[in-house]
Image (tube, rainbow, N blue to C red; front, side):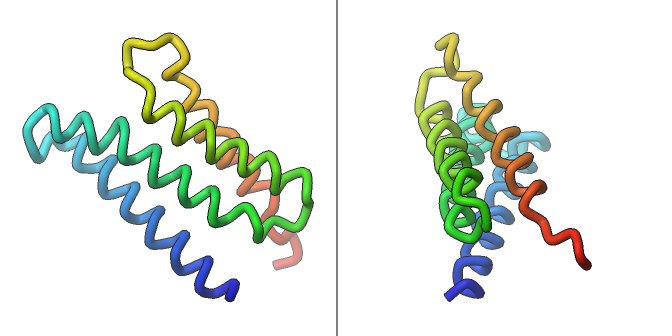
Length: 107
């Protein structure tokens, strides 16, 4: 089961990176680039964090990862002109930090 979760998380992460790259390189119209790099990217990353949360060893980190996933998705769905739309970046950074802190140090 954990391998399936890791595979799903990896696919979501790669799809999110493709969305970000499309937005950076302006491969489509400005509206599509904006949608992919500023909306879909954060929704996919939030979904990836949501899938990763149960795999965290510390329960406190697990709940924090769920919160980071929610903040990413909610921030992505808010209009860009909103002052709290920047929450998506905070959720992204929190999720990355939580993901890095859960790595096995005995490799």
